[in-house]
Length: 236
Image (cartoon, rainbow, N blue to C red):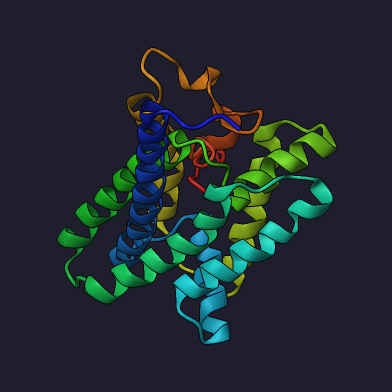
């Protein structure tokens, strides 16, 4: 087995920094959007609904749901990576930590900028962790796995997943509002910009591999999945 060169070790270290910084910021962005109180992304609507009924923190609900989604990879023959497992754990922990540090503002004039900041931060975080290339998030893998097994387009599969998740979360009491729509519209372009910013210089995200043989757009449709592939919603 070849010994890693100093340059190779440095490159891996840089990718790890991008991965964990991106996941931590992603969780923080989810916490800030929740504090804005104007509506959540589909998966966080589900996380919040489950958390309310199960008596859990929303971060813990996110971790448990992520783990359950990861189990669905088995029949789909998807292979998790370091980024996949880290995604399940770190986003939920960061989300709860953010909620414990940031109080809920009462003024609408504070909540609106907070929503914008949260979505922008999510777009930035998406580019960071996807460009690290350590494997897709559990929800991304579910999307690409169903795409391969059913032959349906990524957009159709992602849209179906997002609508089902959103409807279930709403039925459980999750928060849906203008922030949900704003996230769906804004996250794709923001994630695309972020992927170009943090990806290999001179390489368009469309030609890069994010997880295994999964191209970036497929992994992100709106989150760039993550968001890109989310049909307008950054997923993890």
